[in-house]
Length: 395
Image 1: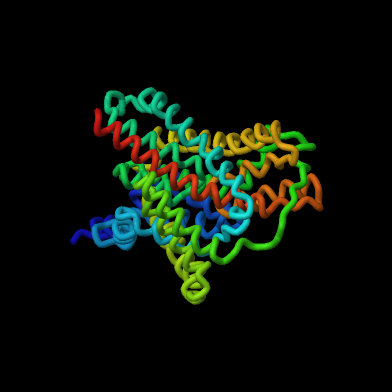
Image 2: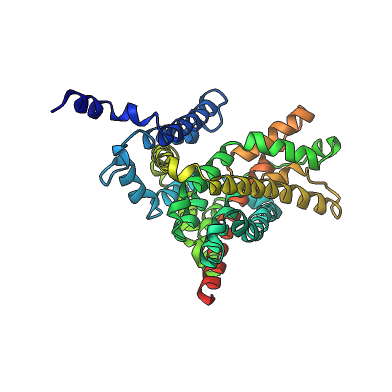
């Protein structure tokens, strides 16, 4: 064989980097580097962003065998995301971490989990208008526009597993990379995005409102019955939410039943950590340059941010509305915790409260809103799937 041909074969990867595709690859390396930087340097949900960033590097290597038919990232995608296994397993772990006692003691907080889903439906409507304008190739394809708008809207809940569940249900494989990255990036950037929105909609006096809290837990019977009853009701009213609600409530039942402590700890630690690692690196593996560096990525990221901001604003404004009729005022910041990013949003709200008043403790109320938001986003996702499926069926 010719020496030159041998050298070309040996250094094919290096040679490919000095082409247009090579520049796109470098751009993806930069994006991956930013995600890893945010994870390590800024500590923005490193368990998510670091695997995503590293997976993106692997996926964009020249002739990346990790994405081949037998490549491990391809195998993980088919085994965990294409069949919705990873979101289900994640929710079992999340359910085992959640204490619903604060919510059961103050059931009114569940309304914040509903109010904070406003951005989902607002963004869905906006997406229906913008998608065919920004992406002319989709014009006339009402089926694709509806399916894509559904997944983009769910991003606002800052609920990665539910977003993946909806996107996968509507078979948006081509758009999976920007949708999943937007969902998990905004979920990780809760400490950056929520504070400015909250401060813009509240006064210092409102942010200093103190709320009473009784530390006594709800009864064991109530904590055991709650996940069973919620699963039954959600499954009957919104059947499409059953897989996610069921897995979340099953994880919580393991926690509260009192006879499966080892399984509860396994779900909270080993299961949740393992699936998070696999999910993160698999999502990163979808960030191939040709599927990511496109105009639709910017649209999805932008509309996802719009949805997230509106979800936060919806919760805050709803709390301010309730205060018009309440003697005991609610700190409006608690409403912002009605998104699904558990427990990041609740921690952010408590931090903001302490900045205004070092002795103000509203963490438990924020946790109540936060866990109700976890349920709210799942039910909202099921409703979106049901409604859009009906619309598609009637088209």
